[in-house]
Image (cartoon, rainbow, N blue to C red; front, side):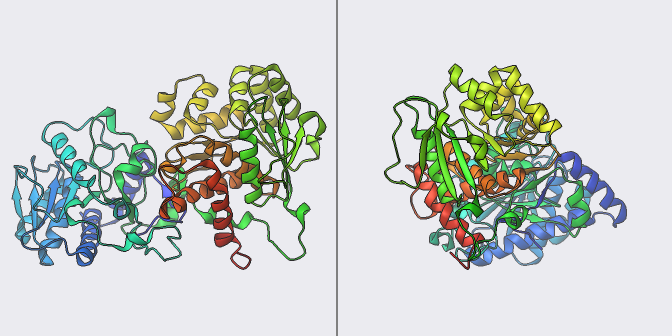
Length: 549
């Protein structure tokens, strides 16, 4: 049975963790069992897709490209299963498979009567589906020769697939609860000429990091069936684009035992939903906390106001803006509910949470404010300019780390890769080379919950918990969206969510709002940061307060 990762906190396995699971499972099972199960699961997926889109017939067979290792063996099992089911198939195997399991799979394919050739076809246009079984996890070097050429050809083919077909989760219809924001057009059958299925991971992709191996080339798939469990690299960096829609084939392994072996999870509502406060009739504005957004040096008050508006829409009871600079507005005309103050006029220690840094600037005044707020005994989020000040001032960084370690009062840091690099004293490419390692390093350095923003935002806690967020798209690639995220998480802190769960919920809703806006045609191009907050409110009520939504 295939598992749709949408809205599920699935474990995410590194190559090392998967190898350990495979070794343990293989020792307890008859020979070739895992490969047989993997091939059968992928074949079932393909047959379901073919039945739906009618893309395969005698004139448009399935082409399977088999590499020399066990990923090639998986492809050969798929070919044998399809052939026995009456589906027209061809296999291209440029180099004969070598491992014992893969040799067994080659015998199965030959016994089933599968046509196997060594030379790639001159054109891919005559095939209804193409299956990438060249290389799976653990690829240590860039693709070369015929495999690199085939990866480029498959990437070009998959790029012609309509975007909705590639992004729709397997098994989720546009109206299903598991897919609350998919466009209505996602129910249409995709163009047959663009379908590429990757087995386990797209060849050339580092399944631990989401990067293309050593800057080489990689397959771009429309769908990926990944085996045993999900991999971090399918949900980060280039992996999100290369993998397309992802389905997991657990291969009948013990998921509970496997879950405890994984170092990371996929972010999903079950990880944080129970922490949302009830909205009973007897509640009042004090029930849902007071947040102060601290920032806004002279000429930069737009950023904290964006954050504060987002906090209102995320359900904070009262939202204040503490402005550092002069010449700020007396109130926010679209949202007079916001209370704007000069920072010296607002007692920050009376708040339930602080979101600090939006438009804060880098002047001495900002540094003094950070020194003043760090000792306050309340949840704090540091973003934007506050992060850069922490990177520049060793005494601030030491005070932050000491408070998190000594007083068990971790802050939340929300850096983008360049800010993370400054905090760690490295460069942004080093952060992007291993985003999980960078997030863990930040939690150790600052004893804080870290939200490492980017494609596949990573949320890490000092106690070792770590999640990758699957929501969001290019609609977020515009100014101000980070300020909005700071306001969302700050509002959740004010409402009493624990730090890690507030971060998980904030990034999930922030990304889901971008997905929902894109689904209705308001993105990814031209979506503005200010449009996110009203959609967050709608999703919050739809998903977590349906009786009141």
